[in-house]
Length: 368
Image (cartoon, rainbow, N blue to C red):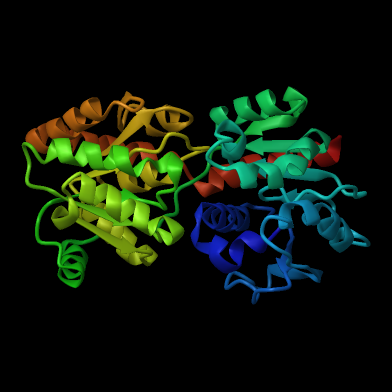
């Protein structure tokens, strides 16, 4: 398995959460597969390494980020040469040009191809990986939306594509009132607040989020808290909030620990998700697992992820999203019903289930 998502910056992003959750789910199986990880030569081995997770003998070289996806086709092939493994699982692209091993590839999303104007350099770097998908013995898509995109942008045989939803880590559950109070004191969060999570690159639509919160504040004295490392988008985020008149009513707190994120989810009045596209979309599920109502737009995988437990409104309609948030803030009974529904719905997304389906895919590939 390509273990590089567990190293470096990727380890705290969605792809790192996916691999960490999948490995945990595989270890819960009655007959778990023995996993060896292909690792980067540039980073230290991940904390997840143990007696049941072995590093491969060869490390993957590191080149410029825009060239890495192209170089990986050769680097991974070289690292797999002579391997005694039964198959290779690429967690996101990272597919070898040629190998004697059967190959399984997880596709989280094809956002650079769905939105080429927003991600021109990423799209160019990923073109070769996209073309190699049709060679994979099996493709795991994390949602029906991603499966549709794989079919649209590649010539992958539909029979080789399996939809396996992601899971929710058990650490996401309602935090105690004491933990929430400590977090409020730590971050000086005195007012009720709406929560947004993630890096606000173009598809996360910071201007739209600011417009939604501005509308909600006409009726409710709430603040906005944004958690997540904004990196090169910091200036864009702060300027959008200032233009909406939210400079004094918003906090951009950067990356937070998992414990603090759980407490933030629990403390928030409503979780707000303005993304234009998600291959799966874990944050709304994490919020619901922590008993916080979630409001999302109707696009990509988000209706399926939200189910009947989240408030799903027409895509891009700031007024509709603000109205949904207003209803939740005004109606305590509705808020409690959605909290209960969210906890029950999120509990159906487990890494054990994802691991069972992934192991079945491995067996199918090896059987063929």
